[in-house]
Length: 235
Image 1 (cartoon, one colour):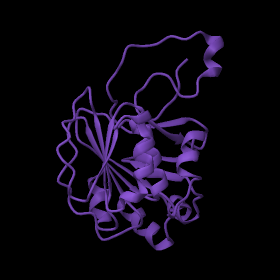
Image 2: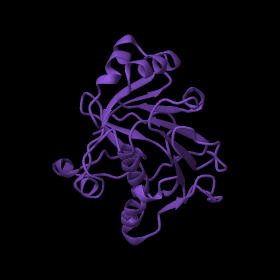
Image 3: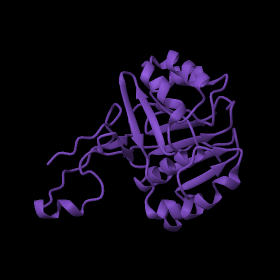
Image 4: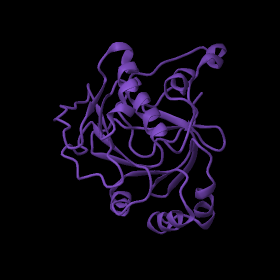
């Protein structure tokens, strides 16, 4: 049985296949097969995945809330990645960093502009999360082989058009009608998509990768809810 899953582009590292008896399929909580971070389900309930671990540079932009960025960081750490968070609000990330990895230091916090070289490899991939406000400076550490960069913008800002054009994947959560119109022009969204963006519920994101557009609902696990609370657009 094959799970129909969107990977938003190239696949990550591949592993040997697994088999499971058909009577045990109902016990599976996640899709079997392709590597990546499960970010939620689409409008038809199919799991959606971002493959952060790649042999080529990969940049992701999220115009949305801290909650979603933190869920992605936790799930990336859960796939075995080291997560380096560049942030000007370390207090918002401290609890997550301590809880991730069951005591292992898989999530590290760094001041803006102070992320050291990470030494990312195929066996030790890295996801850099840039939570640097409305005008993030150009990062010292950029995307490279086995090191992806996720940039969080709380709202549209003067640097957003450049980041949208340079990112392989863009996620948009609830924005104002004016912001939706500008985003629609840059990303070539349909009128229906532009009209829907200002009405999105917390936890819903429109993910855009070229011509691939997916509405995705991110639902927290019990452990994530206990750590991060309920889904929210504002912090």
